[in-house]
Length: 630
Image 1 (cartoon, rainbow, N blue to C red):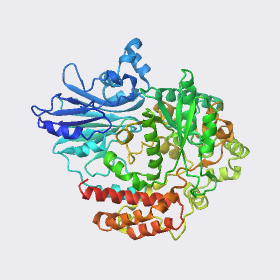
Image 2 (cartoon, rainbow, N blue to C red; image 1 turned 180 degrees about the vertical axis):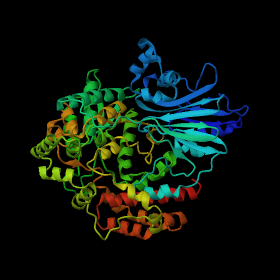
Image 3 (spheres, rainbow, N blue to C red; image 1 turned 90 degrees about the vertical axis):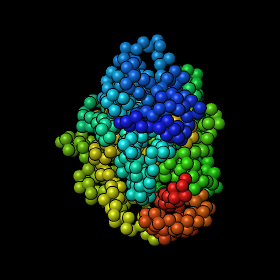
Image 4 (cartoon, helix red, strand yellow; image 1 turned 120 degrees about the vertical axis):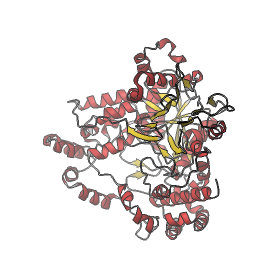
């Protein structure tokens, strides 16, 4: 983690960096400063770096790095997943690789390839390099922005940090609430680069930043090939090539200075990640602990057709399939998002998209730390990558005049039991807007017409109608697949390192894997007509058949409405407190919020409704905290 302040003049006070760096969380006691002494003359650049110690090579980290001519200062937070490839490209001996920190490799890459070095990197990282002579700062983040990078301009200076809490603490900055961003958050709409603070922006994943002459220029550096390519004539070759890169991605994520753990649902994504990790660890006699979140057995749960309320039995089958998986099921403890929101505001400085999910993540994170683990594997990106459903395959084949293959795919999907051939054909041939409307009408979650569909104030809805219309991407098209595959990491979420002192690693978002998958025709994701068939085939021999071929899906926090119902008095009190805030009144319809809370208290279990209530309460508490000077 790091925080830097740059200026075109030597006017940065030493105490400013100290106050900014003290807000870097999860750094332990190893904070390093440049210039080294806090006391002293003013400078045109100051940096503070904390090394997490999550990698074995971190003990050799010597940041900040100063170039030989003392012109350039380089800092980063990085885990490079293609270390061996980079060492060869940089002509560094493999024999000494274990003594070379990832920061040193990334710096060498910057020296060799300059501002296009990101194209050679795989992994999670963010870095900045400042030139004293040019008075320029260049920075970038990884392809999906898994490692966050925030920036702000203040009084002719640029402030950059991997943590929102640190940049907000800089004395040069007086951040104010970004009411549009907060209001859109209530409907889970997030515009690129926006944060809860108007003066602070987030660098989107796959982008770079150049600060020169007092101006910031943002450029997209990651633009992978996304055109239709028929790479192989045999469907099995698609599976094998994807599986090979997936195995490499998992292996890269196992490099750790502490035991590695994993989330484990009863589905494909986390199941594949955990199982592949267990297979690779078994070769060296190691094991992995897998955590499953499940509803309390005494709580009533939300019921949806095709969904299982409790994923634990399927997760247990995956764990039992491998002798070196220790499986721990953590059932809900009655907490709601209200019990965690104040901690997230304090350590991550943001409201979150899904408070209910943060509860089980929080429970797992604390159990991890108790057992000495600081790395948690996930499969969060899997639905947009390896386990993509294959939707749009029929339409794409028709667009490329491959009608025989298209109708063969429709028949295969019918034979596989996924959907009737006529539904596949109708979905591929009907106008997209008509099909989407019909699909949502038939399959969309049914919420009582008496319940509020939106908790935003009407004036705010009108003023932001265009942004709110961006909710639903077109389905069954390559564009929809690309939007998901290229989607950046969610920034409106707790930052795991400052929040819990752990790191999330997601092999399904590996850049090398995603770029390979983007070159596949959509039909390649449905071998033998199976929805999510690419992942199912990659799971042969790795997952138990009952999980690999499972057709139902697992709900997360299925009993959450029960916990919320028991705390409705607290939610009502927050709504009353929000009624005293002009900002809350401008953003939210508090009468509708009270009505929604009343509905949950009287047995409504819709996760759509409880999610809206939590986001509204989260935004309200965030605004109230800021107004109180928090």
